[in-house]
Length: 245
Image (cartoon, rainbow, N blue to C red; front, side, top):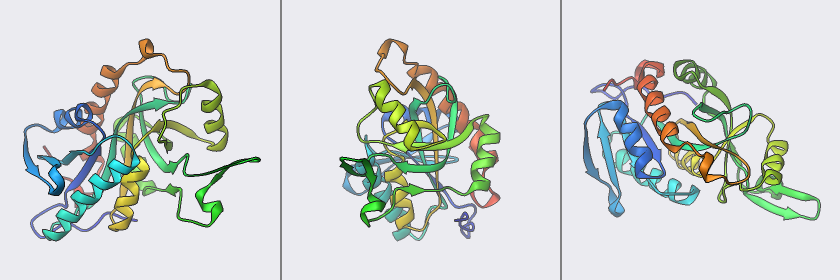
């Protein structure tokens, strides 16, 4: 899916959806001052020079609901978005996504949407329902990866954060090429797909996927890397989306 053409008054806007306020603030720090706009349902959009940024809540359901609300409000205002970006910090699969690194999803995968069986996990598609993967535009993924110095690979969306080596190994075996784990990307992608808007996911790594070791987490470093990634992002976007701070 390619980016939408620019609106009559300039490039189409980009919606960035994070889980929490700290991630939203890290994105806004890259793009300068913002103004606050209310959305239906009490959510708040931070409009910067380059992006509209929404902290929608933790998990795929909250992410989908928040993204859908913002997308619908924009469509009703006859100013639809040209791209939706799921963004934030997340866990990296060692050794390919070290702490502080940037990951750009070439596949956004619902890792635990399905059924457990005596023979193992079955994705919901094997049960005859829905989808479990969204694939961003490869050309856009390549451009953003080059601009941010990141790595492209699968980002899995989970509802329960991995806390053991066994589960980390199981996810890596089930999803070859997986680089990062987060909790919102698939929900954002589902909302974007429902509105026919392209999607992207950008994650910066705060911790290794596996046994929970809070002392080893580098949240501040990952948030700083997220700011740097969004400083680089506008130049990587196609002209139809290229607003500058």
